[in-house]
Amino acid sequence: MASPTTFMEWVVFLLHKYLSFFLQGCEITLVLALVGTLLGCVIGLLVGVLRTVPAPGPKANPAIKVLYRLMQFILLAYIEIFRGTPMMVQAMVVYYGSMQVFNLNMSPMFAGFLVVSINTGAYMAETVRGGIESIDAGQTEAAKAIGMTHWQTMACVIMPQTIRNILPQIGNNLIINIKDTSVLNVISVTELYFNGKSAAGIYYRYFEVYFLISILYFIMTFACARLLRWAERKIDGSGYYQLVDPLADPTGTLPTKKKAKGVMRLW
Image 1: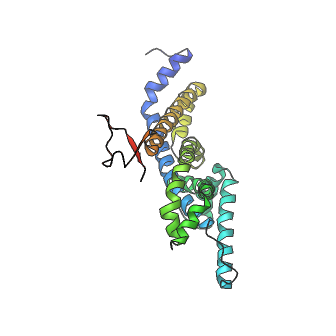
Image 2: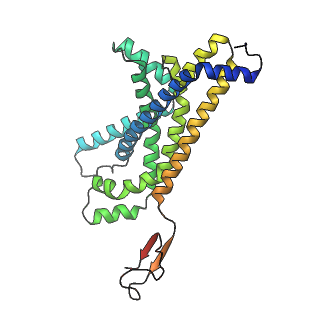
Image 3: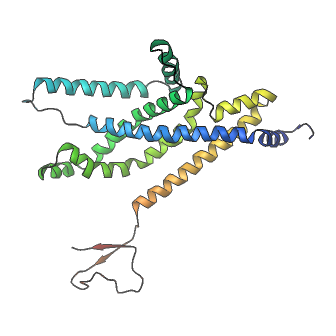
């Protein structure tokens, strides 16, 4: 095969030679982003719910008040620290700091999962808190009026609505994590950017290699965005509802042969 000379010839040559290398990087990038986003959502849900726990009343035990304030301080410190520092710096501190201070020899992949998860959790915590506070307060008052505890109210009334409202932000975090995993190359995580940088250094064709990498990143983020949008539409259900008068039609059947997708009854 003749040596490539033009831009497109180099692109085709590098794609043919390093396709499996790039796909391996894509796989690790997606695994890091998906697992990190999932764990981050779990952390964010827990922290967000704890942040909305009502403060103890004036007659509460002083020890309970101190514990409540301590918990809120720790949660707020976690959110502010991990939202206020770059993920690249967090990766360096977690990976090399744990090795030096605590003598923990964690693998780069484990450190990558940990950093992406706790970083995503900090952002999701505020998203969840905002989503909970966006729900009408009357629903919480109604739940308490029938004897539900705070945790029962959250699990059965508030959180199902909150998760639907914050689903677009969860999708945004996933797309951001797909791109931001590239910073984990500083701790030798062999994701797409790391593999691309290694391939570029062999022939010194940086423009062509990073052009291919940008296309692969776009394909991954575009596919995830479309899948998440499809999931949102499925959760929303049908937008068409036909009212059924129980007096005129006690059985609830429609006069037409083809029933509507959604039926809103009057009783």
